[in-house]
Length: 328
Image (cartoon, rainbow, N blue to C red):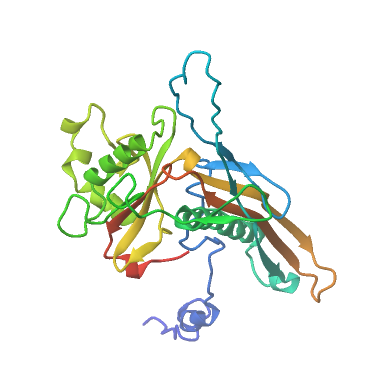
């Protein structure tokens, strides 16, 4: 008869080792560091007028009014005079910064090098700041005046001007109740621009809406069907251009009332971004702090204003998700 072997004590049986192997289990973490969901790029820079400034305030543009031709006063009559009017717009800087510290001792305890991602996070914050500044200026009070000593305030006109509600297209336009972004509202915006003498053949048209606006457009046959256009409107399932408007999507648009979103149709000469300091980021080691941490310091300074009335409109669109906005 063969010899019986107790594999529990046999160094070659493996069972004793298998029973204790869990003691050697390890936990492995990913070395990938990815930014959480957030807007990373500016949606509006490059689509508005821009300029660089110094000082406590700046006049980015000056407007000269119109004159009207008149018949002569008569043979050998004195020549009459017409005085043209001038208007100045003003923009003021707002300073912003962000400071992040990475402890040197902490870096020794991780396999991840987070410095570049810290810089990416700061750059994304700057991009959102530019957009927030422009979106807020679209319908805010604008400062006008001849010099920097005294200003008058120009409020966004929702009275009777070009549309039935000034420079505003109501949420109920073309419908009995509040509606979302419709082709009818976009057509009305183009009519309003032309009525205000905006040169649509020379100007870049932009329409800023959000995810609800995109959904509204995708549910309209005039947008998605090739029967209404000689060129396909959809590009990889996205509406990027329609009726001459470049369609830009931003989740940072404001609301005018419950479940009503403020879309922004404008031409490039209708919004202005003044830059006192563009995005600047420095990475330095702080020798004055314990642990000699690395500091990622980001700063910027900018201001924005709405330009001449008629170059920017407000289009109100129903949006039932307005109360559930996700930021940043």
